[in-house]
Length: 575
Ligand code: C2E
Ligand code: CA
Ligand code: CA
Image 1: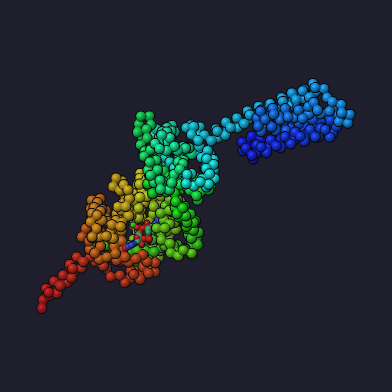
Image 2: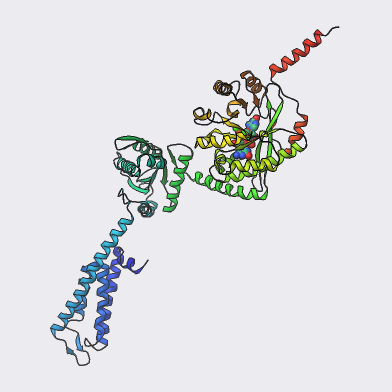
């Protein structure tokens, strides 16, 4: 803290008492100094200006006047000009000196009061959002700092709930309605929060498109109800210039209880809660310790992926795909496997979805493409010519240079484009559909085929499906697993198969585990299948062994037909 801050800060009552004592002692000290150095005729009396100026600065002009009067009297009528001769000073001397002391005390006090007010104004300025005039993030951090010690003393009455709101379609709103739209929506939301019945939250604008509201006296049991009340108060449709506009907003909640003691950590928890609400596509999410731990362990795992790629811990496994009607093998799906030195086998479900939110997925896909091309080239050299499906995400496809990298790998390993199929989950395709279509067309021109993975689990499949240059729909295993018993699943699967037929493309069912699954799928007219009934994903070597020994598994109907044809022939054979 610099001297200015130290002098102008607010003092507590005991600190003020201490300062008064120090200043009075200084006045007495200067008086003694003047006496013992020979009296008022020497220069030491000027030392009195120091406690007077300090009193003025610290306590304002009133403090300056009091210490000036005390100093003036201390060096007043009883202080001789010369202590050796005890010659006394004229009245005009000490009155005139006291007048000077008073002038210095008042001036120091007034200038310090002005500076203090100016600093106060600057501080207020730094703690307010200039547009909405609401207190800002800095003010919230200071407020949290203020409430934490009090809360620790009296937990029950002073539990707080911090609710943060984030507008996540700010870019779209600004490009449609101009820059003032966000300010106007934030103003409206802040007003609605202030007017919430039965609550008096303190409202802060912590970022351009973010508000925070601090609710005092919230008990853990009240949190959900209060979050719901906030959602109602802050609706998705906001008014802007007599229009109703859609605001994609998420709320995050943090209960400031006994475990919280750092304002920065509370803000971080609020951000985590908002991010979680966004990820999970829910309107609101309340922070818990477990969420934070799982995020921390995910981040550590993501860091390990990069190292693991360098250390060669990743390999590819291959799961056979067959034509359902005759059980004939036609290709494989390449699936990544990670042997972590400490955690052991890590499932792709644990790292792929998170990697898809970052550029890490590009590193993974680069490894997968190279590894698979190399394998396909080896198999082709040993006379096994098959089609390999590779899983990629929509982010991969949109990455500049992705198509080029794929073409170069095809060339490097001398693999024809039609031997490669790309499986893309529908969820990762929704954004930038036109760009995705343009990129996919480049790939299909090189005879690479494209299929939609996990069909049925995405959000808006049908409206864009017809635009995509795809040749296969892969029906997700969550529907296949329960066939034929589950009516809902069987409606979805049969609808997907009919849709594929109408689009003139093929359908494949994932996760076929039982003969009953297979028989039903064949009845529905599904073209291809894949699942544990045929084989689990296998290492490249184990796949060769499987391939050489595979006896086609057929649906019961075709087996019966085959058997009956065989019987008919034997019966019809001439004796
Ligand atoms: P997916 O693309 O839907 O892959 C099918 C998953 O189902 C695989 O899990 C496979 O082992 C499993 N599976 C296949 N048949 C059956 C069955 O009959 N029953 C059951 N219960 N499961 C079966 P896996 O290998 O754990 O992969 C999980 C997901 O991770 C994949 O789902 C895919 O989305 C992703 N993934 C795997 N490898 C890669 C990769 O190389 N790149 C990318 N981007 N994603 C990958
Ligand atoms: Ca897949
Ligand atoms: Ca799938």
